Length: 271
Ligand SMILES: [Zn+2]
Image (cartoon, rainbow, N blue to C red):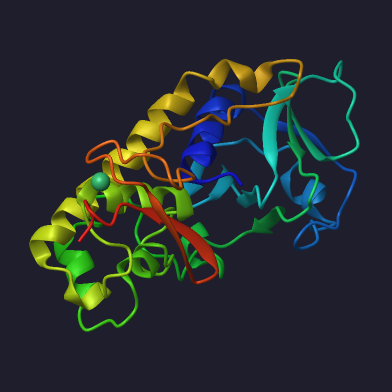
């Protein structure tokens, strides 16, 4: 599943091809994604200039003068830049062509992604409004997290994966960040000290930044002919490493289930 670093990598990959270009036409081959692609999207967006290519949480959006095209990659979506010389394949659901002939193409085999329109401010959109701060934003800091964790009975892992608290900390990044911070994922959120939350916030920021940086090296793939854009193997220390030796202490990594998701951790290093 594309996580925040992949989405940010996608944004950086497509931006240079789209910024300040005018949308010449939109071809929708499949309307039925997670929510239907609005039928009037071409009428609303064609002839309009793309002023910004932005990301909020795992949503990408193209800011036009009269509104935004919001894109979510769902479980299996990917974006690429191509031209009309590349014929669309089975799961290529929408093409957004701009004035220089480049095409932004969404491929989504499982159709859990979406392409939506809003003419209101993006932050007022019902999918965006309830979201917590961006993990790399200064608003996400130890004071903020301490305040949100206060008296909470949920686990610290559940807290950092809650998009109302902070966006973009997916299952992989939660396990990895808690390992870096030395915090047991089962610990109650309200029982983690301010000092340890400070370490956790820093770990989340480092883990995500490193992953984005790593994704940056694959940017050229966005225009490659095979259409397999910039998803990348991360350097993982605990995620998926059940039974392997902890890189810090040598004890075997444990796997448990929390909220129907796998958690990986070292019971020796994480208290
Ligand atoms: Zn360990």
